[in-house]
Amino acid sequence: MGNAGKFVERARARELRAQSWTLQAIANDLGVAKSSVSLWCRDIIDFTPNPRNRGHSSMKPHPMRVKRLAEVDRCQREAVALIGMLTEREFLMYGLGLYHGEGSKTDGVVKVTNTSPQILLASVAWLRRFFTIDESRLRLRLYLHEGLDLGVATEYWSTTLGIPMTQFHKPYRAEPRSIGGSKHLMGCATVVYACSRTHRSVMAMIEAISSSFAGPG
Image (tube, rainbow, N blue to C red; front, side, top):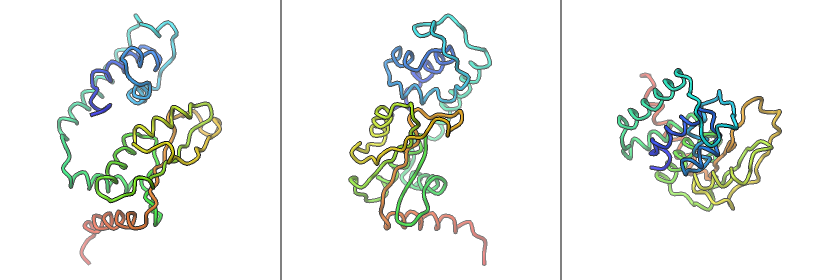
């Protein structure tokens, strides 16, 4: 089940982050990857590092923060129980909807760009499941801001998506000033599969779904 199944570790990571633990300290404490901790805690934006909390902390998180995190975790557990396992058709339709919203419409190339590992992982898994592809033609381009660790980000996306680093294009490194106050530690990744037949098949299925909502005449 991967990161999605680690409910106990995820809840503990969020609790420690709310107490101003650093990502590395949380990862060390839980015995998980720092990238996983970053993903679990990415919505905790009002974080102020406190050096005295890197080993352990006696500080108590704000009650409203604890309540919010508990609500998020409850909703996620309920969602997992409600959704269950997707059927093949449900997975196909989900992937088409995802591509309709996030994918490139340019003829000849299947391409999805995002900072979310969940979206890209679902897109790549869907592509592999329902289309006959040549794995050696999958490519990934990484957009990563200067000052962030390129090696860690490259390994992260390669491991997450199952695409060898030898199939990565040269990354684009952006100046920090060009992004305002927002930084994605693992960057923004673009998965590319250049194949006209595959792209046209995807777009034809999306059109078939869209046309079903068209009125008479």
